Every structure is written in structure tokens, then in C-alpha cells.
Image (cartoon, rainbow, N blue to C red; front, side, top):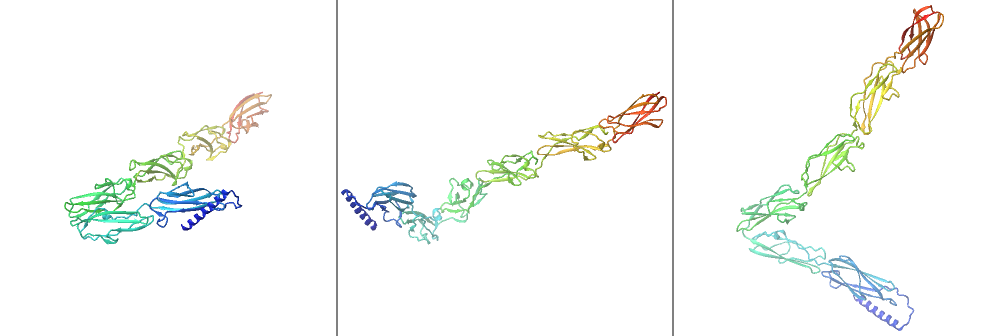
Amino acid sequence: MHTSSRWLRRAAVVAAGAATVTTLGAAPAFAADTSAPLLVVSLPEGGYAETWFSNDVTVGVTAVDTGLPPSGVSRVTATYSGATTGSFLVEFPSGSVTIKNEGTTNITVVARDQRGNETTVTKTVNIDRTAPSMPVPERLTTGVPFAQDEAFVLSYGCQDSAVGVKECTVAGVPSGSRIDTSTLGDHTLTFRTVDHVGNARVSSVPYRVVDDQLVVSSAPTISGTPSYDQVLTAGAPGVTPAPSAVAYQWMRNGQPIAGATGTQYRIVLDDLGKAITVRATASRPAWQDAVTTSQPVMAVAGTIGLAAPTLAGQPLVGSSLRIEHGNPTPATATLAYRWLRDGTEIVGASGRTYTLTSEDIGHRIAGRVLATAGGHANGSFTTAQTEQVALRGIAMTGETAIRGSLTVGSVLTGVAPTFEQVPGCTLTWQWLRNGSPVLSATSPTYTLGVADLGARISLAVTASAPDHLMVGSTSPQSGAVKALTPGLRATARTKGKGKAKVTVTVATPGLRPTGAVTASRGGKVVARGNVSATGRVVLTLKRQPKGKRSYVVRYAGARGIAARMVIVKVRIK
């Protein structure tokens, strides 16, 4: 402080000299002002550790420009942070700021001259208006009297989170010594504590010394489940001689619960996570009350009850599964739903029902019920998993059948079963020869060919649809396919002396006719030929005897076509 005063006096002289020179109008060739202002920020004297105070603190601020020549102070600002915040202009050359808020405030003062030169000073101000605390032993706060000459050792201590404790005393009773219980009647203990800035707390605690006192042999008990909304019951303490009345007070973390003075108490939300006790006060006329407290029980959140949920529905693509469950306990619980695929939650599946998709094929699905209720721990209940999800089959009634003649060249028609009408359902036809697929025979009809001669024919019909299993039916095998019995017609006409022409037509529907044709008389072949592509052949009879004659026309047949004969008559000239 003395050094600052010298600087201030010097600054004043310099300032005065500068003013005198300016008044004379001279223009001395001094360099520009490059010196920052002189800034002094001072706290009141008498603070603890120089910065701690118990009341409002006025901080002095002095700012003088000491430049040669001085340009003059242009502005002084103070900025607060911590318990007090803000920014203010300060009067100069001498001004002050006042700190009122309890706690630590940092003050940054900046003085600036006309040339922009600055000086910064930071000070810390601590205000503590709170006296130290001095917990009173529980025995003294309950009002329980002391028996005459009872040995009760008083141990105490004081705490101060700011400047610390300067004094912590109980009048006449050093900590760790016995209080006076030698005299019956009412007594008072005076507790006093003071911190280093003078904040003091004084409290008087009465106590009573008595002769006749009920004796407690056992504390009250608590029965019941200490969870939310459950009822606890107090058991009576053991007291001798028997009291005429026992009053109860339920406690939460050692503090009385308003209105909780019966033998029963229901756990509420405020109790969760806290220790619950019951204090019993036993009384008897002409005797001093006996007060005793139970062992604590910790109040916890309740448990939501819900019978194990189940799934309804079939694990088939396109089917819907539904979570079935009873009513939760408590009934006010809010329920939400989730679905799991092989134990992993399915994104976006949060309804009570879930429709199976192709993504679920081969996986096992489960449902989960999430339950929440005030005062209760969140509940989670999961169903058993389904079997692996599979494709749904297409319902089918009836069997595949074949209609038509089992002869080469005939057309067989397939008859399909009746299939369930599902979107996108299509039928596939496949004709089988002796159980093996016939190449390209995939339509509802099939024309028997030469390759089918002697074979047994069947038909497989299959239905398919998206997200469904294929289903189908194969007809029983037919009997063996027989050769075609052709149509055979022969006409004859005379063609001169001893001659005749026989026109033969072989009809083979669905087949190209081939094979040999002969004409015989009396067992002797008199003409022969081969059937053309049109199924006709003309036989010429020569040197035949005159008269009305009969001829046997035989078609020898071909692969898949049976042989046939007819008789034709002609008059030979």
C-alpha cells in the first residue's frame, strides 16, 4: 500500500506538470505515450487471509496515466465472474465496486488510456456469511431423559466448508468428556461455533436427568416387504415395567415422516432408496418415557407381476403371431411390446401382433412384454421361442387324374386337384413315362406317341406361390399304352381283261401311316405295295381268272399301329 501511494503521488506530479506545459502552449518534442496507466485495485483491510469477508466488500479502484507526456485515462472497466457476474464501468481516477454475493468472485479491472495502452489487475473476493455447523448427538435431540449418574460421553465437532472453524465448544464440556447427570432435573448445554470471519452459531440444547425410567430390553421390529406400496408393520418394543401406552413414529433416513404415527406404514415413492425405521415411545404414569428405534430396512422399488406370456399363431410366413398375457400387478402398469428374432429385437416391431415375413424363414421368433409402473422396477417378460419359421403350404383337395384312351395317337387330358386360391399361385404340369419326365410335355394335355407304346403314363401337377411351399400331386400310372387300331378301307374296280385295281386307305389319326399292304386270293399274294404319306396305296391285280372274286386286303401295321385286314369283292372280265 505504501508503494502504491508513492506511485500515485508521482503520477499526480507528472500529470500536473503535463497540464502546466499544455497551458503554456509549448510543443515539446516528447515521444508518443507508450506507457500503460497505473492501476491500483485494493481490498478492505482485516479480511481473513486477505480475501475472506463476512459482509459486502467494497473494492477501491484508482487509475492514473503515467505516460510522458500522458494521453489521459479513457476508460476503466470491471468484469466479475464466479458468484457475481457482469461487467461495469468504474469512475476514475478514483472509484469503487461492491461485491454482495456469497461465494468466490473474481474481479478483473482494465484501465485504458487515450493511446490504447492497457493495464489489467485481477483480484479475488470471498464472502462467507454462513456459520459453521455443529451436529448435536441424536440422544440429545430425541428428548430421551438420562438416568441419574448415567455415563454419557459427549463427542462433537464442527464443520465449515469455506474459511474453516475458529472455535467449536460446548460450555463446560470438552469433547470426549461426560455431561453432568449427577443432579436430577432440567439442564442445558450451550453449543458455540465461530469461523475465521466471525460467523457464529450458538444453540442451547436441554436435557433432563430423572430417577424412575422405563428400561428397554428390545427395540421395536419391522415386518413386511419394504418395497413400494407394500405395508410395513411395527412390532412392540420390550419395556420393563410394562408401559401403559406405546406411540410410534415412522422415520425416513432418521427424519420423522409426517402423519406416519400408526403401527402400520405403506411405502411411498419418497421412501425408495432410503432407510425406514420406526421409533417407539413407551409411557407409564409417574415414569419417564422410554424411546427406542428399530433397525432400519431399505425401501426398494416394487416388482411388477405378470404371468409368463405365450404366443398364439403358427410360425408360417404370412401368418400373424400374437402375444397373450394376463393382467399385470399393479393393474395400472403400462405395457409395451417387442419382437425378437433369434433373441435379437426386430427393428420397428412394437405391436402386440407380428406378421411373419420371408426374412423370418429359418429363425425362431419370441415376443416380449415390457411393463412400467410408478414406484416399481421395470419388468420384462419374454415368451418361449417358436419353432423355426417355415413357408406356408397351399391347401389342396382331390388328386391328379388322367382322362383319355391309352392308345398311340390319342390325346390324354389331365385333371388337377383343387388348390387354395392364394395371390400369385401358378400350376406346373409334367407328364411322366414310366415315372420319368417326358421332355417338353408340360401342358394339361398330352398326345400319346410311338415312344409311349407299352409304357405307363402318369401326370404330376404342382402349385406354387410367393412365400408358400410348393405342393402337388402325381396321378397313379396308367395301364400300358396300346398300338393304334387303324381304319382300313379297300375298293376294287375292273381294269380290263383279267385285271383290277384295289385302292386301299389306312387311317391313323395323330400318326403318319407307314407299312406294307397285300392282296391275296386263296392264300396267295397277288399284289403288294406300301402305304404313302397320305395313307393310300393302289394295288394292281393282273391275270386274274374271270368271274366274281374275293380278295383279302391286309395292312401289316407299323410301330404303334396294329395290323388290319378287310375283304374286297370284284368281278373280273
